[in-house]
Length: 337
Image (cartoon, rainbow, N blue to C red; front, top):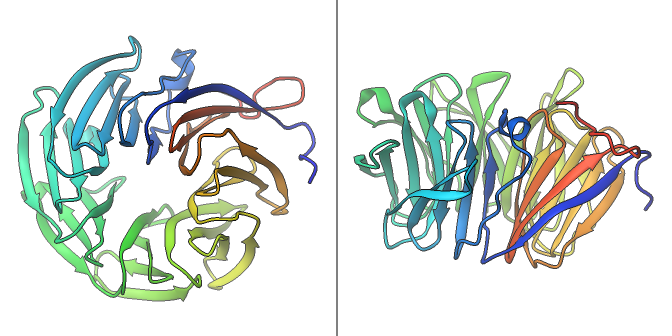
């Protein structure tokens, strides 16, 4: 299928490495003050977190280590062992100068950013912690796990578990806060459902029987003034959901293996889907027409991240990290910085 008019995908960097399971970039300014992106050769890297907090990069590794890189010097500043188990999620909690880490041993650990001293060790779940998300305004962290539970943690009350959300019948892979209603969040599970929860009451608002197989990722986005959800699944599809009518308005088909990650760019009119088939597909956000299929020979694609107000998109794969710049036919950025 032909590309959308005036769109060019420039492969700016490919860095081979061991498995990069998740890449998460802070949606703010570091792109503009720097002319490069660091990619990493970290064995079994599970998560790379780029944050504007002094332009440091937090890398959580399958080996159980956590490393902090200086984004300017491209040198490692701190490295420490968290656990013997893989670390699947790590976040800068900038408001408190902390790092929050979730691992396969079911623990959430909190570290002081400056000293790397562990200030809290929580026996949070009885199985792998798949994801951690930090509430944008309140002192809450939401964890999702293979124990089929989602838990809400209040760090202003010594990390008490203030609520437990039960209802999924399989691993909970990801959760996402509703940007238009921060008391609401969505969860995606390998039971094939999306569940919408009220954070305050702890109640389930509704369930979408979304896919015929497990769901790996979930994200809210806006199209015009309407709210939508997008989900990616082991049934090889991604689906777009009208949040108000609870109806699937589009199925994005074409991948030949599990859809591992999705992203709707906040400025560019595109939807991105990643897959274990080794490809990235880029879709028009309005027409849902396929714009391009990108393949870089680094095997399975696990994750995608964008930098807000920038045209650069980063993908993490089995064998490395890829940076792609999306620009107009004259070479100008599609998103002004």
